[in-house]
Length: 410
Image (cartoon, rainbow, N blue to C red):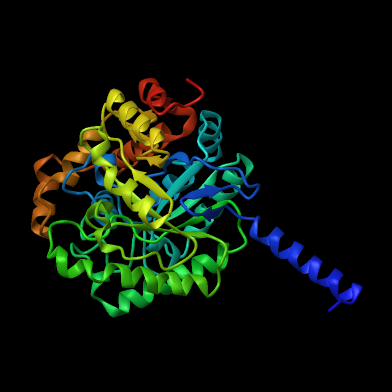
């Protein structure tokens, strides 16, 4: 049968339009990831850790190690209004366009952006609520300008997916067994996906960071993980068919035995690896998974080690064509990351208070009395200096670490 020329033209235009739409976003083809222009990508980048989910060890704290604990210590020292002002300034200044520009010049083509879900809800977080999209949007605008993709990483999920300080939880991965929290995480991810469905700078969604720590009854909890991933993915796909969904293994994102066959045509899988020999056997199970299921894999976190170790591991990942984002970008008074900044003078007085026994109101009063009284203005000045030092213009690269990552500006 011969088609009417007008119908033929319409069909050709429709096909061309569909083809064009498919290439507006980074896409998966088997185990490979391609740019919208069809260029084979090798993703290499860093995590913007400690910004949208502060971590205790990057504040030089050990036991006072989650956002809510850090926040509580600061409120005890300087009061609510000053604490909210501190966090406002921290969020505005810790990562700025200058940081993204520098990373682009270094050769980074992906940023993993960890965040606490509370930033996007009415839950109080760092003194406010519903203020997180501002910082995500800023990051996306900067990264678009400097040709960097952004992977949105829910580092702290409703109920807690890890059960430790890094997810800002109540000490147990309640998300795995709490129906209300499963509904909530699915709804939040749907909202995120609806907001960014047409944003080509977003490479995808890292649904949960490091689910299910090893402290708990791992085997029973693990059975809930992939069904939860499927549920969140279904919610996302109701509004967004464009972006890649990144799934992390259990037990600090190391265990891929929780996965069956891929259940979506735009999936990638992520693993984390710290403090192990930089040998092929340490990543072989992930390579095998990639080959068996014909899916991309990303090494989402590693680092916190010597320059020599980082170089060896980065070389191993590159040799195996594994995408990577090392952790983290910036730290205070620490060479185990690309960027460094000085610890403020007097900062130890803050950490001494935060780490001391504050388990009761009586203990808090006694602690303040035992150190001769706390001057809130001094603490405010110390914390403001922390922010000032963390600004890009006051930071300095760890050259050995940057060289280990193969950054171009070293």
